[in-house]
Image (cartoon, rainbow, N blue to C red; front, side, top):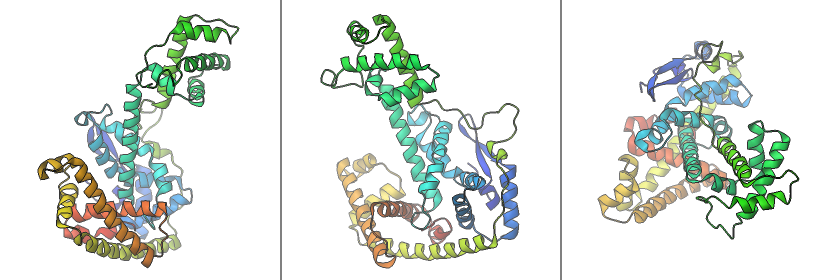
Amino acid sequence: MQPRQTIAELFSTFVEFMDDHFHRWVSDRVLRQTMLNNLAEQPDASEIYWMLYWHQQWHQSKQRAEAHLCAYVQEPCYWVARRMGGEQTGVQYRVSDCFQLALAAFPKILTDYQPSQAASLKTYASLCFGNTIRDTLRQQREADQRTDWGLLRKLSQKQLVESLQMAGFSADAIAQARLAWTCFKTYCAPDKTPTTRRLPQPDWGEIAKLYNTQCSQKATPEELEARLKRCAKQARAYLYPAIASLNVSRENATGELQDDLPDETRATPFALLISQEELEERQSRWMQIQSVLTTALESLDPKIQQLLVLYCRDGLTQQQIAKQLEMKQYTVSRRLSSAKETLLLALARWSRDKLHISLTSPALKDMSVVLEEWLQIYYRNSDRELEKAPNDACI
């Protein structure tokens, strides 16, 4: 992937795929013009400055601001998708599929992101993108491992009804399907079938008897089986829908979806001033956090530090580290977790004492994100990049 060179490109271009690989950056003409207009007023503003500005605009329900921020996180989204998708990873989703899955979660990421407490938007989004893809793959594996009958056994009535409504079933058809499903679940009671993932085909004769005692419109075992197969098909499509590319051609339309966004007012001097003040405060705080975590890291046992080097700098998996150091994998996992807990404790105490932050669960979650970002910068980047980290991080 060729990195983007200018601020305008960072906030107005999007990844285009070809054969499931990065092909080129595609510029959105409206977003680009908006950035050029703003840059004419603030030519020396940094990347993080504009990220903060558009995030502030997004909080004011500016639709275009979300498009600018979506463009901004294209690189981290692509690299996460490439790491987790494609044939080389052994999953059925292509890199482009994973990329789109991750971006679909971006509105929620913006909602949860807190610039005053969390790490940079790119780092925070990377972690969230990875979790989104991982959860989707896990759910898909779960769906693939289940037979139709195992899926119906796990399904709730609300999910069944919603899946049939989405498929356009009539009210009468939904009522009949719901009754058939209820009889099916009654027959496949938990005490009779403790394992439901690979639930075998049930005795449709017994289910038909139960169904016909409750419905005036009698049904044969074959009819009930076919009816519930259709239910399973619709439920699977509803719970795990297929992915359609956002970049496919649209009939009688040109360009990308962002072209249809309405025009909005450009940056006000007051908003720009606030963003600049917030940037300076975050830069100072980031330098203090570096000092706190560096001191805590240097106090760790040298053997623990070696594990962090192998894991964070060299990118080895826990299994690879265990093999190289001739120890059990669970020992590596436990020691890495202990090291991160020690660093997180140091950061939490500093935040409580210096920033007067209450150590609530959300606050500790945000601090964990900051810690992960700092570890990446400390072990993988050069000293020069570590010094300029405030331009890439919001603390």
